[in-house]
Image (cartoon, rainbow, N blue to C red):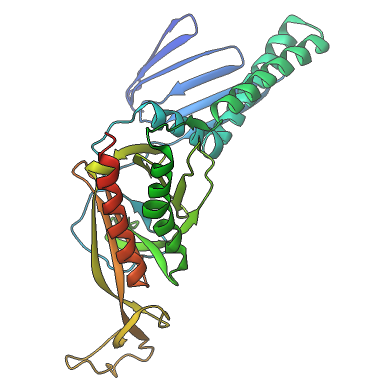
Length: 349
C-alpha cells in the first residue's frame, strides 16, 4: 500500500486540508460550502440538514494552450473570436455600461445559482430550528424582491446629456458627418466586420460577422441620437464626442482625436458577385500557375474576385476595427466624413 497523508485544520467555518496532492481550502456553514480544490477549480456543496439530500457542482481548472505560429486563413466551426488586449482603462461611464451589459446578458445564470444556494441554505436553517413555513416564505420573498430591484437598477440605461454653445449647428454637423454616413453602411450589399480567430489547435485565422446599424441602443440614453454598429458578438457605439467599443464583456471609450481612420481597396473572393462591387476576375479555389483550374481537384469551387472597400479604425492603445463593404463609395465617404467630424469635434475640446 502507498503512503497516505491527510491533515485538516478548522477555524470556524473555514477549513484547510493538507494532503499529498496539495492544499485545498473551503468555507461555508451547515448546508452550504464552497471549496477551492488543490488541483484548481471549485466545488459547491449544498445540502438540506437531517434529510440526506445534497447537491455537488464541480468546476474544473481550464488549461491554457500553447501558442503556435502556424497560420490558417480559413475559419472552422471550432474557432473562437479573439482580439488583442486593449491597453486602455475604463472611465465611469464605460464601467457602468459594462455592469449594465453583464447584468442583462451574462450574469443571469449566476444570479439563478446564487438564489438556489440561498434557498437551500435557508431551507436547512429553518428545518433545523423548526421555524414556521410562513416566516420562511416571507423572508425568501423579501430576498427575491431585493435581488430583482438590484438587477433592475444595475441594468438601467446610462444618461449622457450634451450641451454646446451652438447646439443647433452641432446637431446638424453630427447628423451630416457621423449619423448619415454611418446609416448608409447598411445600404451596402455586403457589410462585414473582420475578426481574428483561434481554433482548438491554437491556429490563427480570420472570420467575419455581418454588420447591423442600429439607430437605438439599450445601453445609453442621450439628448442627441446615438447609433451603434453591431455584430453577433460585438458592439460599437458612436457617441457625439467619443467611440465606445466592446471587447469581450467590457466596454472602452476612445476620443475621436485619438483614433485613426484609413480606407483601402481590398480584393475579396465571393461565391456570387455583389451588385455594388467591381468584378476583377474569376478565381478557382485551386489554380495552376497560369490561373487555370487545377484538374486534380474534383470539387474545385469557382469564386469571383471583387474589389471592395476596407475601413480600418485603430489607435496606439491596441484598438483595431476592420470593416469590409462591397460598396467602395459608401466606405470611402464614411472615412472622409468621419475624418471631417474629428476635426470639427476637436474645436469643442
